[in-house]
Length: 234
Image (tube, rainbow, N blue to C red; front, top):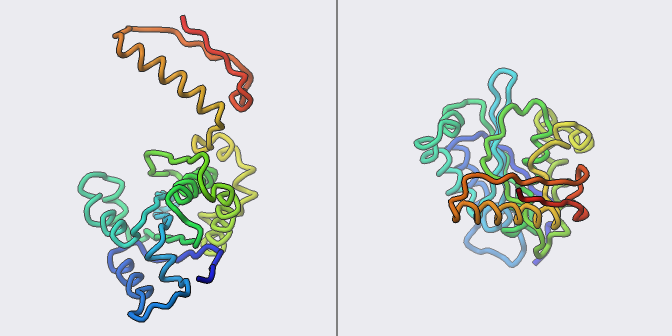
């Protein structure tokens, strides 16, 4: 099986008609060969997707990942608007677009990580007034994790070539104050350990029905990277 080994990005209107046309365009023929095709990348492999909407000068964005881009998109368009106003707004908008991202290296963990990195990059664009994701999905160690930075850069460059207004150059994003302050940065192993210490203490207090406790965290800014944080429980 030959590798494609570069990201595929398809830009389409965000609508049920467009996603059905996309499915038809990339539908596999009956005599499928052993050669890896764009149809495989989009329809058989996990994908990452970005939905954007522009209202006047404001842009909103949603980033997701899925193992079935067709059914997931139909769910967003037909079912999610019944439960969330932001999805209803997207479904009603004539300006909403969707970017479907595929890569022959994508697996579940890698798509979750790329999803999180794209949220991080988008949070560094001041034109994005609303990033609708309600959770982040940073992964730590997994097979192909070393490929994540390179693939994210490749994906972003392709997105930039298709829409530089929403996806500015990577260097511009990384130099922005919004990017540096973004909550989507991945925590280090030491920072994750510190987070777990705090969560365990809070869970223990809740079980004991303890009304209050002061938790002091001391250390230099960014100190969690080298384990220099100290905790005092009062």
